[in-house]
Length: 93
Image (cartoon, rainbow, N blue to C red; front, side, top):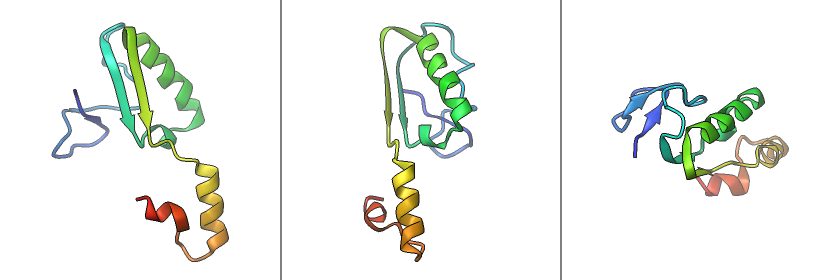
C-alpha cells in the first residue's frame, strides 16, 4: 500500500495530484483504493481519473472508491436546516 496525498502529512508516502495517476506505468497496479476523495473532483476531472485507473490497473485489478457522498441530499438538508448543521449526516462523521 502506498498513501498518496496532495499534501505532506505524517502518513503520506508520496505527494502527488491525486486526480491523475501520471506517475504510474500502464498495468502496474493491483488495486486503487480511495476514501472520501472522488466527490471532491470537478466533473471534468472524474472521467480522466477513471481512465487512468483503467490504464494503470493490471488485468483483474480492483478499484475501490468509498465515501462518495450524496452531495445533493447533504446540500439540501444543510440549506433547509438554516442552522449550519447537517442533521443526520453530522452524526455519521
